[in-house]
Length: 188
Image: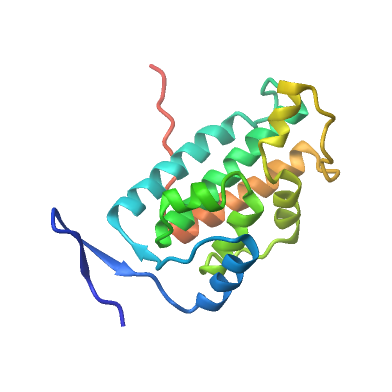
């Protein structure tokens, strides 16, 4: 049974403990990735941050539209940003602390997907999972520009294929979290 409890003595906003059905899956991931356990606790602040991350993901996703400037490595780096922002929407919404995510997930979008699915995200797409493994950690796609490293393996993905996977992921995030599309302002 969920109980309403105050966020703090300074706030009367209610929070709900997150659903506990996935505790075994979370415990397994904590062991695999070395993350410190915590109790999921949904808060108004987490919900607001989740919404802001969704809007940010939409903004970054625009930089991946056909005809946008940049090289393939830039495209994959920005893809990693979009995926991480999108998945963190769910994680923050169900009660993951943002600082915990920064410390234990970082830029590993494959971990984000695993933690999201362990907490009810329900996104079982083999190609998206494969893409997250190619991207993780996504800084590697930017690093080669900075220090001249060789290009990492891109898994054979093509831009239109990646765009399709991102669109489907963003649609699923919107469905799961209830966050709407960012409205583009019309120029007058």
